[in-house]
Amino acid sequence: MALERLQKVIAEAGVASRRKAEKMIVAGRVRVDGKVVTQLGTKVDTFSNVTVDGEPIERESLHTYLFYKPRGVVSTANDEKGRKTVVDFFENVPYRLYPIGRLDYDTSGLLLMTNDGQLANLLMHPRNEVPKVYVAKIKGILTPEEITLLKKGVKIDNRKSAPAKVKVLKTNPKKNTQIVQLTIHEGHYHQVKRMFKAVGHLVDKLSRERYAFLDLHSLTSGQYRELTREEVDRLKHIY
Image 1 (cartoon, rainbow, N blue to C red):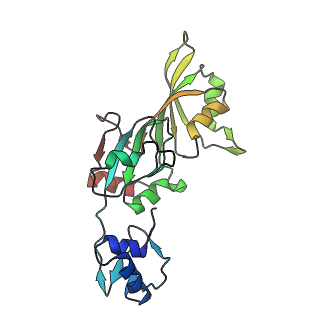
Image 2 (spheres, one colour):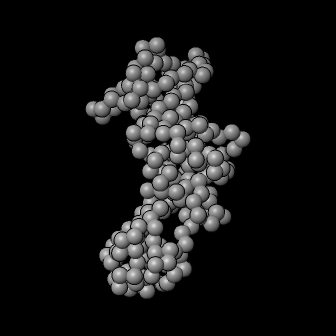
């Protein structure tokens, strides 16, 4: 969940400048979720109820977008190397969005962008086991034994991955490559690539095709659409 300093939230709501907002906080004029806050380092999330002199400040409305992330794009708001980020695609959207989870720099596919901290927390929490469907082009051809290992879970850095669903979509014996669909609910660093590497195969290309019940449908690389209220409600209530 994205947390921001209280004085910044007050300033961005147009109540006062950040310096004046700090004075309001110190003077005890600000409440967060009904409690007086006087500590300047206090951070609040999207769903915190902030009032100044008893009046609630207007927070930005909540929005979530389904984004078809291209390869060669970083899943962060800023990149110290100056590479293109997912946020760059939303310059014309009047909301501060951030990604729910991440996709690797060279991985394409479905990524959710939001300013809804509660939704982001819900979807990223491991206990909710949100299914994610990936399609990978791998070097070599999986054996039945390797498929069984992936289905049971493979060892990565002294831990065993959760069981995965595996479906071979296409095999090219001449080029010694295979296209495989992998469904997992974990989201560790380089998860899919490391799972295939654990059974002896490198990934040439990787794309996330589905997230929970959502898919890319008619979107092309770099495009996005806003989720409907019904879709957001469904995401919040299926886990």
